[in-house]
Image (cartoon, rainbow, N blue to C red):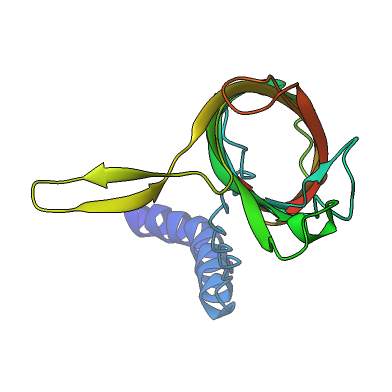
Length: 232
């Protein structure tokens, strides 16, 4: 009997704590589960690489031009020596402010012999010049406007109504005879860039030639010109 009382007393003490723990478990099991939401990670935007700005080509540039000039001889009768035409080709290299070039061309000036005293009936014939030369250039290499000054040494070949015979193995033919002279010219010009490497080329040339094998005395002339140029 004594043992039964001890057991009943232990059970009575332990039961409230067991019940309390059971209630806690029941309450916890009834609570809604707490969920945590994570914000979706933003997709990383690919970094756009900056496009490098186009750079101008450094170092020496090649250039060329084709111009048409109107040679006007000085100190001659204007009614006899008429304005003519000069087709000029030049090309070379420039290093910014300084350049060098070669050139070649052909030039005509009508000579009206009918205007000379006693020349009636002699007609009109061209004074013809073939030439090539070497030159140097000073310029300001602006992106849009390029002023420049050229100086060139020319090797000229002149003809006016003079012919000779050129004979082959079977026959001979009449050809024009050209006589040599050395000359100088300076050109003051401006190139205006139109698009890309293309530019308008305009200015004035002052040209001079020694007597050589053709003239009786030195001659000089002015020549306004207009053309097209390129630089790349």
